[in-house]
Amino acid sequence: MAASTARVTSDKRPYVTVVIPTTCESARAGLLPDAIDSALSQRDVAVEVVVVVNGARVDESLLARLPWQATILRRAEGNVSAARHAGRQAAQGEFTCFVDDDDRLLPDALRIRLAVAAAHPDADVIVTNGLESSDGVETPLVAPGRADEINRDPRASLLRANWFGSSAIMVRNATVSSDVFAFDLRYFEWTWLLFALLAQGKRVHYDEAMTFWRSGDNPLSASRSAKYFAAYPAFLRELGRLPMSAAHRRAIESKYQTALNTLSNQALQDGELGRAWQLHWQCLSDGGWRYAPYTRHLIRQSMRR
Image 1 (spheres, rainbow, N blue to C red):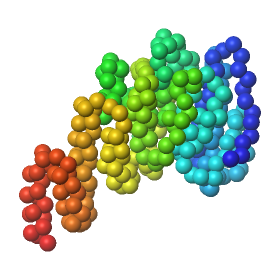
Image 2 (cartoon, helix red, strand yellow; image 1 turned 90 degrees about the vertical axis):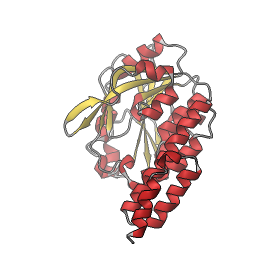
Image 3 (cartoon, rainbow, N blue to C red; image 1 turned 180 degrees about the vertical axis):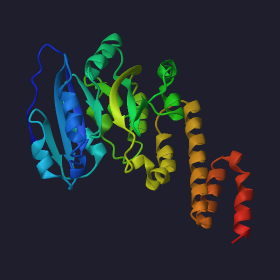
């Protein structure tokens, strides 16, 4: 791993490291500089920006144009989870946050997050809301009014609707070890991270303040791919092995059964009748009897073949 080091020296202001993982390919030319600038332009905070360039598709001319104030780490492996881990390991600040290369921090984002952290000194992780832009319309990523629900039961609330993501969190480096980021997941990494943090007894506090902007228009988003949905049941199985209450484990089991049923339906639509049956029996054998009526549908489809 090669690195160029150009750090902002901490003074009496709070010191925050912003980690930005990127492939730094030509398609990111109109996005990555904005993400970096949004971090460097934060007020009343000493900021260290660590850009982790990973993979083999690097546009060297784009890399050469990145602001000199940023620390650049280069990794041959194209793995965004490993890139975030490397950035957290390199962080010098009192806090670390993350920004995807197609997202950006809003003005005063870090000052706002630090104020929340000061108001909740027992919190190891601060999470805030943000804006998502889709077709030119900006809406809150998390519906207003969920703060009490989220802070009361972070696991259950995340299983209902996502609120924990890459550009939303800020961790307290003194209490959150870099080791918690040492996992290799292409999908669902933020769900895993939250459950792993809670399994370690870390305290998470959510605040509704808007501190980041993200694009919802990326057609290449991993969460829209068929591989993403196909990987979901296996991920839920692994997630359920982490320490948690019986109620949370039952909720994950229910989502696992639903995921299998969804994949069975998709296989049927794709003409893969055998795989549709396999996934259905797997769902039933795991206790997903609420999907038993779907058996009749599969039988009818089988008789038409």
